[in-house]
Image (cartoon, rainbow, N blue to C red; front, side, top):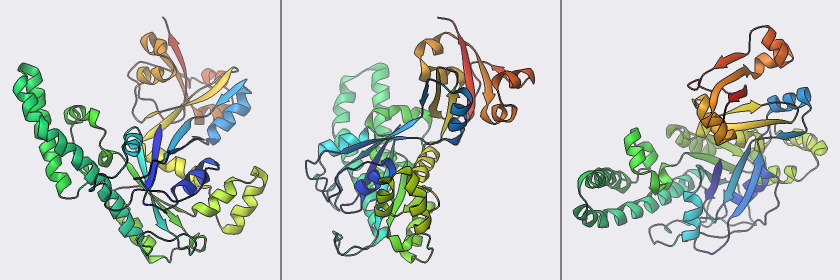
Length: 368
């Protein structure tokens, strides 16, 4: 799972990256027109269930699920229209599964806002429009060439291109009205047609307000409320935390963090909030493989069937799938061991079409 952190310049993207990952990337302002390299981080997914499983099995190895983060250069207003966003930035964003729009909601005399004032709603709308315009450029370029390609093709290939043209024409109209592609309803065939495009405004997106320390735990900030309402109205998950404070806390020893969080009124770490919101955004669940050798978490889309989930572990298991022994974590915790759960008839044998549930502990039976 890879998540792209985007936003306008000076919104605090790298600060947020450091806060969530515990990293120490240099914090500075830079724009998408520059050749700045993106920052990368890998975040382990905290899971109290896996901690409990670790204590139960005492395995040689414990492997938590991870989220890869990519922090790209800031996108200044008008860059997409002027075709000034660097190809490297666009390539980085097209490779991610989801986007996080970091919106500046903090005041700072030391860090001037590029637009001269702090206005979270304006900035969120501006970044969204940049994504729309970047996609519109791709659509217009393709539509300018597709007719010639249609004329050269015959049969099924020609039919597919005609369907593609029809769909892209619909996209063109939608994007020209300054609407993100994710607001369109697409059927499975249409999704397959445009799978190779990796449109930015089609990707799931979350809004993250980077707030001032004075706004931690407060509900009085009207501009923040307006931003949250805007996000909710577009079914975008919304988060708010103070990136600067959270980054400083993330640099502390674990024994010191709780004290500082309590002093600032922070009930939950930015990492935990971020990971939970990301799972919700992408509709993901986790299942576990357990044993004395390793306790490991696997991340899959919700409603994934057992045989497909097996492929996350190894293609041989997917190909040679026979049955899945399944015990949900809560039942394992309640009974205290796999054998005790088995004696009570709680361990189930499921077939290849079983929909894996969040928290399932699975032992696959397979033959190669």
